[in-house]
Length: 415
Length: 149
Image: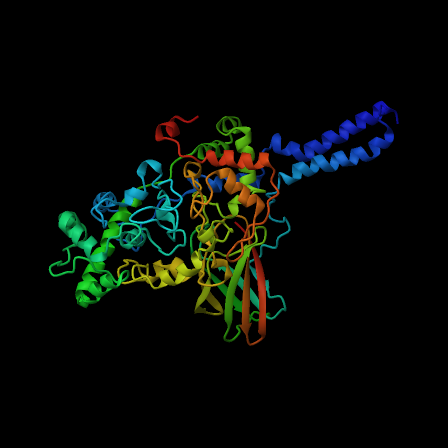
């Protein structure tokens, strides 16, 4: 064989290998059928219409949403008269605060979560200790580090300022005459003693009104919907078979990031579905002194089961058959230790710092953690090293930025 | 000293190039579809031949992300009914190394060997396995089923 012929053979073999390997990723078809299906499963177009919350009979009531909105911004529902839900769930910042851990009356232990799409979540908070938006809304009000309010104070404030709106929705307000100014069944000994001094009927009436306040807030929070992103536009173009247009929406690096997101990066294992969360709990060995030893889900299960405001509780409007998520949740085992709920990745790039206590200030740092997969301080991390190079990590980061919400005008106009 | 591009070089360079370039491409294509030869039958004889187990989802297509019910029918290998049974359900995603996101439970005997499974949930599309463990008069046995959502 002459040198020239050998060279031709080499070039031929090289080209064949290229087409077999890299080529199929760069040239048509860019996506396998399985990948196309996975991409569509992540698109907002795959999100089903929001069903009514069976545990909240006013969940779709516009008047309830209006009252809930007023209560969401109501600073009187706090110990110092300065804190409302919106203090940490800031509307212009995807209803979160950009802080590593929340700051209300005191400094909390975990990061404020965004609200958009949370009506779809079976469990709320990082540890899922609540199973509905309305029940979730009741937690921070009584948390001494957040609103620092208490049950009788909240109910009396609402009776004092929102009586007519409340009564149109829920019937007569409870009789607040003779109620202690400050009382609740948990918290400081003084508050508990005051609560225990109340008659059982009074306690029940206050609890019912307190639950109704949560239900109104939830009716408002349900209206906070996930927004269109460039990724959704890309998926729509692919669904329409218009690869050329699709490629004008996400650039090559972003597409590479998407491929890694649904492939080698294993991101979709937990960040799947149109809200980019599996709504499940995972230990990923996140660092940070006390934050690395936060028990997460493992200690939340008992709280949720014992919560009088859960789906099966006396203040829920649901029948037991509506409470399958609560009835069939995983209640024990090593998987729950140090495990936190996968947050939605919609809009994630605008929500630094990241993870349950804001342990990472940049997406680059979070992705490095996933790539390195260090051992957990508490329990066992589910992560395995990904073996991605710097360019691949950068590509995933670029794809994550394509998950930023775009304005409705932009969404309508298209790219 | 100038190096010449010799046939000997070609002998080892060519396979190296093929392996390296194909390797890069294949690594980037790690989202493999489920194995093409998966047995997708929802009715099977259990591993040791003690029972026939048949699974049926309550909804079609099988929902992703929402909790729903299934039924499992268990008979003897000859199709005849068997006595009292303890049935448990487990499952997961072999390509992702995780189990089911819930703890499904057989909650009711619907008669004629059929039992209701409540609390079933699949949180993503792809290849899932469901293992039905049966303990009854013929002894303990299990059958594993494949689903592709």
